[in-house]
Each structure stands twice: as C-alpha cells, then as structure tokens.
Length: 400
Image 1 (cartoon, rainbow, N blue to C red):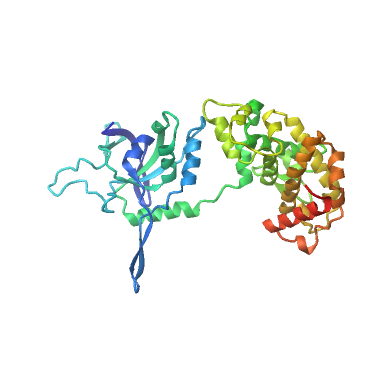
Image 2 (cartoon, rainbow, N blue to C red):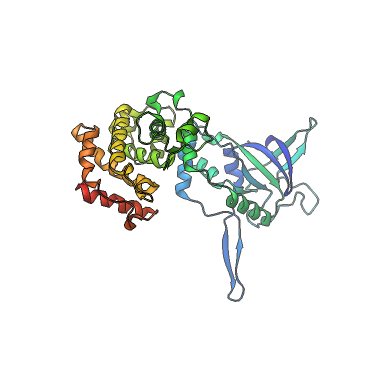
C-alpha cells in the first residue's frame, strides 16, 4: 500500500499553494489525525492559551455520517483539507531534510512530472497529516460497516508546511462564514426527482415533499399558492402565489406531514437506501414507530394519506383561516404547526374509525371555531406560542 502515489492538481490562492488530490479513505485513516482544540491555563495573571484547531468529535454526528456512508447513494464531493508534514507529537512542521542533509523518508512530497501534472507521494503510514476540515467525515468511515466503503475515493486539498496559526484561521473561516442552507430549499432539492422513482421506493421525506407540492397546486386545496417555493419560480408558479394574504414555508408543511408517517425520517431513509435498495415494506423490520399513519405509508396508501390531510386542511380553512383577523397567529408558522400537531392526534381517531371525510374533522373541530387567535395570549412566534394554540384547541374540542 505504501508508498502511495496519486496525481495532483496545483492551486494558487492568496493564502498560498495547495494541491488537490484523490486519496482513498483507508489511506487517510492511516495517515491523518485531528489536532484537538485545547485551552491550557498559563497562570492566574496570564490566563490561558489555546492550541489545536479542531472541535471535539461528536459521536452522534459520526454515527449519522457512518449511516450515510453505508447508503447506496453516498457521495462526498467537497474536499477534506489536510496540513501535510505536520508532526502530531511536537505540533511543528516536519522538515523535508534531516539534520544530516538527507531526505526524510517519512515526509509527503509533491513532484512535477514530465507531462506538467504533479504527483503526491505518501511514503509511510505515519500520521503526518493534520485535518484542518473534515474530521467527522473521515471518522464516519472508521465506523462504516459496509464492505469496501473504506476504499472510497475522497477529494483532498493538501497544504504542505502550513503553520498551525494558518490552519486555525482556515478552519475558523470555513466554519463561520458558510450560510446555512434554507430548510425548505433542502426539502425541495431532496425531492426534485420524485417522478423518476417508483413510489414504493419513496422515503418518508420524498412522499411528504410530493404531497406538499400537490397541496400547493391542486384545485380546491386551502394551501393552493400559499406554500412558498424556495427555488426560483417559473411564471406559472409565481402567478399561482401572487396576491395571497398569507403564506407558509415548504418546510412547515413537509414536517407536518412527515410526523404523520415517521418519527425518524433519517433513520428510515438510511434503512431503505442502504444496499440492496429496499421498498417501504422493509421498514416493518426496522425500529418500532408509533406515527399514526405509519401503516398507511408502508402499505403505499398515499391517496388515503393525501385525502386525510386535504380534508383536515379544508376544515381548518373554514373554521380558522377564512375568519382570521389581521395579525392572527393561526395563519402564521406557529399556528400552522399547531394545527398539524392536532392532526397528528386526530389521525389516530380517524384511522380507527375508518373515516377521513371532511365531516369527521368538521365535527371534531367545531367547538374550536370560536377561538380568536389574534388575542394577545397567542401572540408569540416561538415554540411556546405553538403550544398555546395547540392547547387552546385541545381544551375546546375535548380529550385527544
């Protein structure tokens, strides 16, 4: 296995020169290490000093990444950043030459080839590569149970002789300036290719995205044109949403539907997408899940699930949304979330009664129709506001 050689691409940027190379995970597990961020007391008058560049490892995050690595669609297109020839024991850069002037046989080298490409050589398994960014990704491969996954090729950005202060600066910049991806956009991207897959392979997330899109477009849906589409919209979608007095995010509706069919969507997706690919029925052998419409999802009764959600929302529109005063929190995010909380409980009754009609939900919610959600007691956009709305409805309609 060693020496390990691979082609590399030189990149020149203001911080300095680095090389992009493809290195298998099993090699990186041998040669790379995490330099933990540590604070050390230097005396009461001096305070403390900080060394290292990496956060403490998270076992939960490692497990999540490992589960993803085991999936058939695992991919890591972003690079792991390494500081090569960095001595873990001393915290200093390893010199290329020894004191006697001879080449140190353990250091990583970059050589230009005759064709103008570069070649990276990792001579031994000695840990001489500090991880600047990507420690949890790499740690996930250590825990992976799927055969052959440790040989997965990973893109690496390799700095040679990068001093520790620059490592810390690079890490801090990368992890403090990235803009989080909007959750609604994440759901939209996750479910973009729904029509390309057979319905029995749809994970709970994908089905929830599909039903949300239908609620936003189907004639007769109270949410038609009200669900904000995160990506850039075409003319038809823009026209559909134009002039609506209130709107709700894709994420709010998707998560409301998800809670009807799964208590842990990520776990379900991991089970279905870990080779060999599985249909929804495989979830019966997975962890127990008490979500009220779980069996409906597994049995692919998607039309029934959609009808139940649609009929419930029609009643919500009649009793709450159409009568909402300006400033009412029943048409804000916390109000929509609270109504989905109520649906999660009423779905149990509806399933047991075999009745998902509009009449069923109208009868159950009728006594809550007089609540004024513009009242000051409901004017709270936080989680407690959601709870206040839910409890008020529960108190009005009786035990759930």
